[in-house]
Length: 343
Image (cartoon, rainbow, N blue to C red; front, side):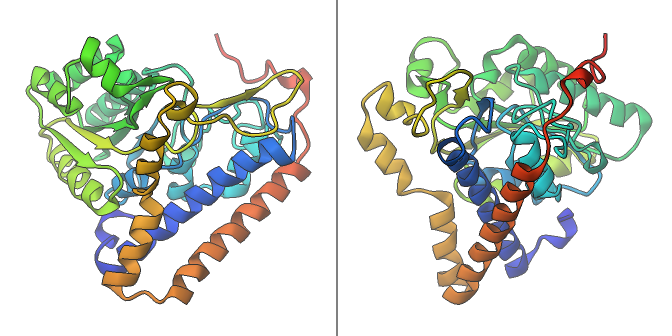
C-alpha cells in the first residue's frame, strides 16, 4: 500500500490484516518443524513479535521504494504483496519458491517488488541498502531505501561505515534498527552494560549528526509516524535517519534441522532456555502486538468481532493454501545448484 493511501481507519484495518498474515505464516513455519519433520532444512528465523514494526514501517513506503532487511525476513515480502505460496515454497526449499528453492528461509528475494534479497550475514543488508540508496541518488530515481537490521548488527563495522557515508552524502535511506531484546542468545541488557553505547540505541545517530529516535515497536501507528518522518526527510534530499523500534522476539532465535534425531518441538525462547527468566517472557507476551492492536480496533475503530475473526480466518486459509502448495512443489534438481552462483 503506497504511503498516500494509508490513512484513517482503512489504514488501521490494513495494518492489522498484514500483521495477522505475518503471524499466521510464522506459526505455520513453526508447526512445519513438528508436523512435517525434516521438510524444512537449515536455519529458519521467525519474526513473531515484529509484526507491528514491519507493517508500521512499510505503511509509509511508496510502491517503488527499495526494501532490504536481514535474514529474519518472512514478513516483509508478505506486506509487499509477494505471493505467499512462493515465499512458503522457498522456506521449504522447493522449486516453485522465490529463488527456485536454492535460497531458503534466509535468502528471500522478489526484485519485481523492489525487494532485492536478504542475507544470513549479520549487518550485510546495511551495506547493500546504502549502496542501493547511492544508486537511487545518482540515477535520480526518486526512490528511498528502507534498511532493516537487528540490534546486534549495529555493532558491526558495516553499520558505522555505511551510516557515515550516507550522512556525508545525504543518501535517501531510512535505517530501522529492530531491537528485539536479544542478539541471538545474549540479552540486550547485558550488552548495554558491557560493550555498546547504551539505551536507547538510537543515540548512535548522534555520532553521524543525523536524527535518531526510539519508538514502541509493538504499536504500528507509532512506528509509522516515526518512520514516516524519516522517509519524508530522505525524499526531500536531507539524508538518512535512524529509527530504533523496540519490541520482543516471541520465538527462539532460530531453529536448525540437519541430521536426526529431529526435535519434537521448536526451541524454547532464550529468556527461559538460557537465562531461566520465564517472568520476562510472560510479561512481553502480554504486550503481544497482535493482541494489543486487535483490541484497539474493536475498542476505538468499532470493528465488529465477527469482522476481526473474518480477517483472521482469511489469513489462516491463505497460509494453509501456501503450505499445501509448498509441500506439493518438487525439490530443485541438485545438478542445477551451480547455475545461479556467480564469481
